[in-house]
Length: 476
Image (cartoon, rainbow, N blue to C red):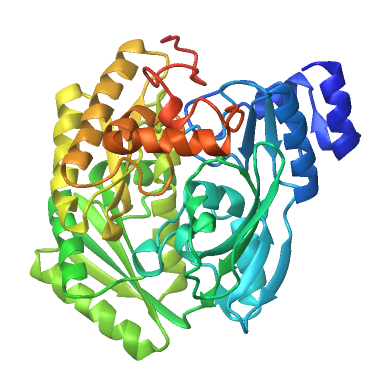
């Protein structure tokens, strides 16, 4: 980075608002994906106005800018693959205003999800999407990827709660879009359009979220099955009852074995299981719903059905489910759990077909794949356990991944349900959205004519995803 550019940015954010130190640059070259690339500079603004001034400088010198939240993303969207500036938002972390009478909250983009809900809980409200990285992820990143989580089946994803937001365009112009009203029929919905844009159209700085009342009661039911197909059929049967659970989490045998090996057997040993949550305003409501879940599971041949309101037991189950990704490496010492095919979405009724196909693909390429996820909304996660130094395992893995994505598209699904596109989904996203790509590229060009906002991602990525890896194996 040229000194004159550093000096201009220092005038905006001060000496403590940026870094060009090699160790800092290396650290900000990662997110939680398999990719890495060093930026030339890390800048930490404290206001929308500072972001605007930084973008004016970047626009003047045609410097790539990668907006970044907490770096919890799994697809490489926050990896500065073209270098330039990483715009790290953690100092813009305030809950600005809560208006429970109007059902909204104003919050800065760098506010952590759990921090926001701790504030809303004081009023008996919450922001429901519940991502797995809730203790760390920032809400601006959630908007940028349209993140969700366990409770999306009942409450929706982040986009469903965005009423308005402020973003900064590539040339530094500040745009406030949307409203603070529950209903809004005023033309183009730019606020929601920014959801899922992954920093390619603008830098999101503030958001107005719709909020909702927090349910007073909840209960859970753990249903164990001989195989993952039976578990998938149970999920479809629950939805078709009709019963919309607050959440319904699936774990296959690979996931269960990994968690039990890594964490001291917190889960029953079975072929597959689902953890179903019901919530509502009274014990009568949740007891009724959990009884229906138990009846359906038993009717489909469940090995065991365990309903409970015991918080310690519930925490053990949910902690085990959330630990799947980090536990998988315990299955094969010296190996890593990697996010290749990661969070596909299929129609709920197609979950059994999808998980059966995933198992067949894993066997075909002799790779270890765990299937788990928020299966009641059709959102399935697959993680692969490989030796990251072995070129052959990477290459077999990517063949398996491409077939997994093809299955999901053929079933009427999508390559990403909640984590976004970034790099790791880019080739398959392009295949899924082939008829839209020219329009997508035209929108990008209109918002960012010099292509400085998170360039090289999504529709712009070319070739294999097996490059710029954070692992020592060279596959370029």
